[in-house]
Length: 165
Image (tube, rainbow, N blue to C red; front, side, top):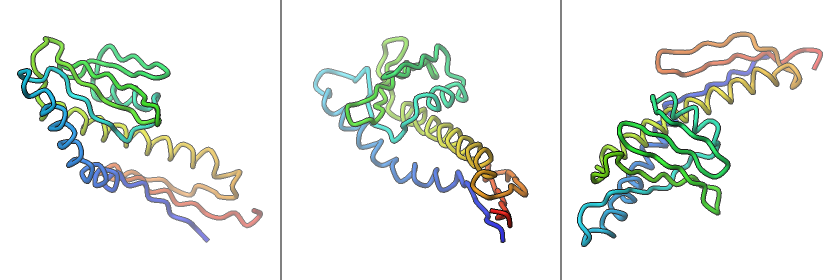
């Protein structure tokens, strides 16, 4: 008997796209709030990301510089934007964007950065889950028979149930 586990980033990307409307709405609401004061220089949005370590690694995957990971704040410079992620009281990371040159933040660019970060974060989560499956397969009574990675980064792991388990 075998078990096949698919870790599909496409499904994660689809979930991210479903949340994309919420990102746009959050950007628009934040910008509309300051509409009378001229162009907004900062944009904030809540994200579904949870793990600060994976968040820091995902930022590095994007080529971010000055990445700093703390207990309640993760910050970095990405594409001339200072991104500061702060942990809210309900354990959700909130992303705050500011341009490093002080100009107004373009919501499209901020949205693109957050979308790319979400994809990089999902990839890091996928890698962490695969590593956990590899590490715990034997003690759970499984033998990892094969593992492949497709062009779209889908990981397929085939596990056999050990007869002695």
